[in-house]
Length: 187
Image (cartoon, rainbow, N blue to C red; front, side, top):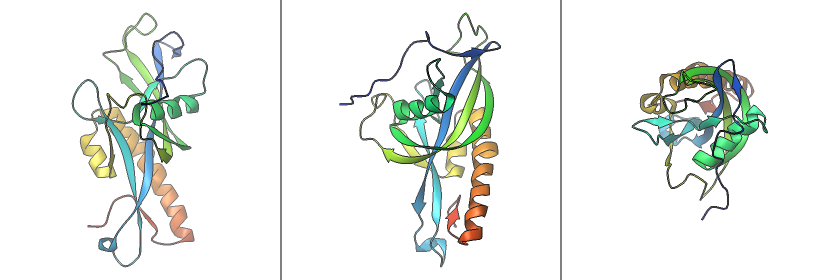
């Protein structure tokens, strides 16, 4: 049983210019690559996705940004509530706009949302978490995540935000220790 409880309701929800403000993250970790990757050992980046409650496809953890927290705190809270992971925010990836069919209200009648997305390095995977009975989590390579991602805006966040940021960190790491990190396994 989980002692943590997910927040519910909209009484503390933030809005800006008719948009519901949302915070989320792309949780990631590194997996050691076996000898099939070549002569030098490598670490492969994997991202964590969760199932959608309203249909097929996978999602990154995200949800409403509330008045009593920073946007980073909201992203970390959503990762904990929805995916059962804790970690460190590494980078702000950008704002992504989308339209929600299920979250229309008096402050946001058209369901427009503005999501602040972050790269989050996972440091802990919990055995139980608030939405465990509704969510399953899966670690995927970036190509697998792109293929299974339900929403186009999340695909853009993965490609244009996370992958570009990660490529920059890989280049910096390779300058110090060539051949140590890869975003996709060698085939």
